[in-house]
Length: 205
Image 1 (cartoon, one colour):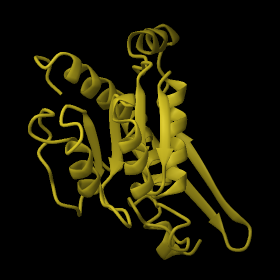
Image 2 (image 1 turned 30 degrees about the vertical axis):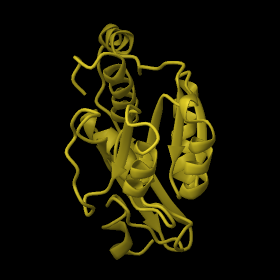
Image 3 (image 1 turned 45 degrees about the vertical axis):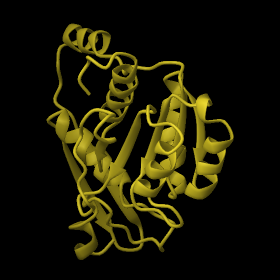
């Protein structure tokens, strides 16, 4: 990497790959996770030989670490989730995380086909998680199509900072919004809160 590239590698959505082959979110998510642990990342590059990333995390007492991990596991469940994102890598990561947490996932990169799958069996799903910017049908288009069939279905809209903001309210007022980039905990926590909120409307999202 040249010096100019190194300065931007942790910026969300920055990528040197061709359109459709990179999201620019990988290193941004890693950087966010490291910072949340009060750590740092150091990059050493050598022209023609590659780059070395060193991650430094502050040491803590083992008992304290065990307490943290035991008290705050990622929440999961067994519900069926319709996951939509036109970026294959993002879709695969999201599906893998949700399935690891016990959820059943129907994953689609094609938003139009996702809507067809939903229309064929709308009562099969407990939650829809959709990206905002997609070809064919955008996130808001998907939401409009779903709401015409099931207005009660909870929805999470994943959106970047440059996109139109939508209030993160209850399902009656609009979808819950998950800003990008996000951590696995932010993702898993919101999924669980939104599903639980639909089951018990008195609970806040």
